[in-house]
Length: 419
Image (cartoon, rainbow, N blue to C red; front, side, top):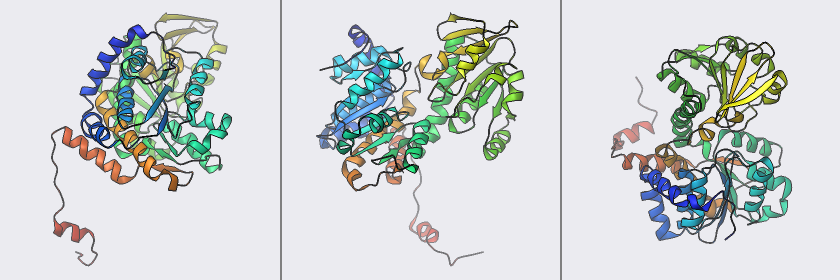
């Protein structure tokens, strides 16, 4: 088996952590994997996955393999790989992995090429780098592909742009758009793990600080909620008037980044867009301002502009780079502007990824059965699968809910009864 990981001697430690995460993923472990073992719905399917190589991802890969698939995995971000997990997948679960934490850009794309060389029938992305590389450099492989899945907002944005331009050549299911994904993973997962990453990197007290959140989508909502819960005064910046009103109604101050830059202590971008924090913002920031990103790519913060403004740069802590400006002010960039929750921490807790990866597994099964009849477009997760994941999660939590009575069903399907 070919693979490229940092150190196979880390495998036992990784296996322990994979098993620890598995305990908190009952939907994937009990409900889906058990059925996959019996039915083998993915038999004969090659899955190429470009995901964050974490303990939770490892349990998804195991489930897909138990379902009969050949699975090949590379990282979707140079800093998000957990090297012990990568080693464990290779040594203990016989899953080829091509991922090393801190890999340079050349190695990152070489690893994507390794996965694509296996001629996947289903692609599984977090950020759409696998699909975009396939479409740009390996169009001859498209004929092998039934369809793909996409895990994150940034990837969905890219894929919808491809679809609008007619560049997308096979159907992709936007797992990120599942209600059981973005309402929970994006909000509660990103919220907790981003704060976790900031605290691990800096060991700063959030209580009493001014915390600026750029973007108030589901991820921004989660980060703002958790920062407030830690005692910070939270400011939200937005370009969408509806989201801006929502942020204000949720109790946060709302203002342009230009104004927030002057008063913020900690800044976190979660927009999926480019250069949200720019030169003119750095020029206004106070001495000691901390800047980080929890959006997928490291483009939300204009790092080249910060480099150009600075007269000195040094690493003061792991994942903390100090940029000194000509007037002596210092700005601190966390995790090189990459996903702070995965670079400086461990990413989302397993219990929330349980639902997201249940959607991934069921979407792969759905594509295996239905993909050849779908047009090359971006689809949401079928509602019956989304609801099934919610039902399984409630079952695993020991929670029961009501069901509609025949009378209620009839009433909801009628129009005659009024005031």
